[in-house]
Length: 457
Image (cartoon, rainbow, N blue to C red):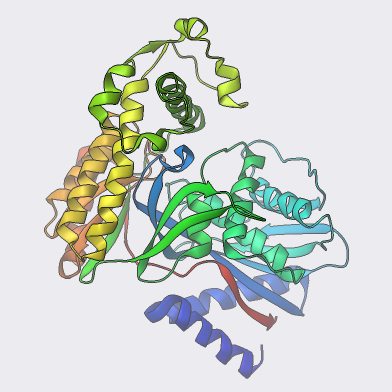
């Protein structure tokens, strides 16, 4: 690396990470050395994509609702060098967990076994090949998502979407293909269908569009436009004088995909039932201006699966290929109530942040957690302990689970002056109550995904 390249990299990292750029520079050098050891000396392009924490708006995105995530300064690095064929060679710095993968670019790439890490890269590659009619070269690539700078995996901070986005921008970058950011976010959302996840677009959009010091308001309903759909979004300033603190409960539940699919089914059942009275609706958000008191008696609290046929509801068509766990009945009313009230909380949260009213925002976080726990039922006993301790910590204004749920992380809004004492209060008490060690870190909002620098490794 030349002196000029080194200086340029330092400047880029200062822009991306602020005060943490010194430690990040060492990380980038380690990744560059590893890339050269794997693939030999020569030019290498560095790309990155951040994880996210969702402040409020849980399980609303796939219901065409509203979300308010923040991009983190924890990210996935993706180092790449273009090849002269269509082969993609893929290494991960955590080689003991994520071994070498190789595949050929095509519009129909055979997937790796279910759950394999490379499927997120292959999904992004396949979608880009489809988008650009196959006119893409392959690449030699190295992924770095290692701690303490990487996105923690399997805790609800969207490490998988960060990997998908990083792979997409790297493949586009080495091929000198430009993709408008909103379109890139949408493509990456579609790319994750490859791994069997038909969720919303929040994770991909915040990874692409994040800005330091801001949350991203996103209306997840595409607005028809020519030639491509558009989305309503806005950057919302975070409150001054407060920190976002993320705490990992240490709980991992294995069947979250089937649980997630069940929630999707229950929301769609709510739409199917309400459409009998409001035939113009397609998603629950269409009823945001209808008082809940009017909707509540129209929705069954418990809908037996045996009654679907007499309601002329075909569950298989409704689910579009999703698989469900064995279920005797669906909790339609509670799930619908969560989505509708959560959308309203997101809109109220935006107003609170624009007014820099942190206490009001904290109260909305607390209410959102109660809804996720009681109406959507995505909490766990351990998460409840962690949220309770977070709220007891001095300086905390609000705390809630974040991510898909069933374990994973919580997020708390804490006075900046009290942030340093949060961990010393929460950690020992959580360990005593659950026997688990929580990972706790202060969040700094990060920049969105993109090209970092071109280096001679």
